[in-house]
Length: 112
Length: 115
Image (cartoon, rainbow over all chains, first blue to last red):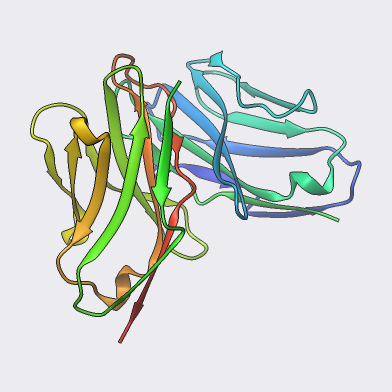
């Protein structure tokens, strides 16, 4: 597609429920990144994919968070048993090898 | 490990005044450096980047930044602020030896422009 596409754009969920956030990167981009943006916390790196493998998972905050990427394209970030502190904007980005990193508009998650 | 410090979480200027947003980085490897802008309720947009070569980098919307290795700085400037420049600005660093590695961001600076 023309840009990085994320869905849903907004999600309100009850504490304890699982959520899935989807990212469709720019066509042909091999690298895909997930970040979390919280008030006062800036942009927090979560995980990075090169193709379907994740060489860097260092930013995932707990074992409730997981991500996968299939076919070298779409990625899904899953948060299990959501907590209120998970409320944030989840940003996805993609790039070609060594190229500029382009961001999507983000998925706004609110846990109530 | 790499890190970025943005001095000043909030900067206010008058329209037409100089914009200076400060960024210092820490990196044990040659850094790639970036400035991104985020307008309200939007994603991040790349303003400019430094990888190798010329240390003064020009970006979109009249912004520029200078890589100063001796000062470990990459400050963002614009000679004359416009109202439309009001946004949040993020400085970021990545590993220059490994293309495609993740960006590490600073906490951001909110720029306000008054008429």
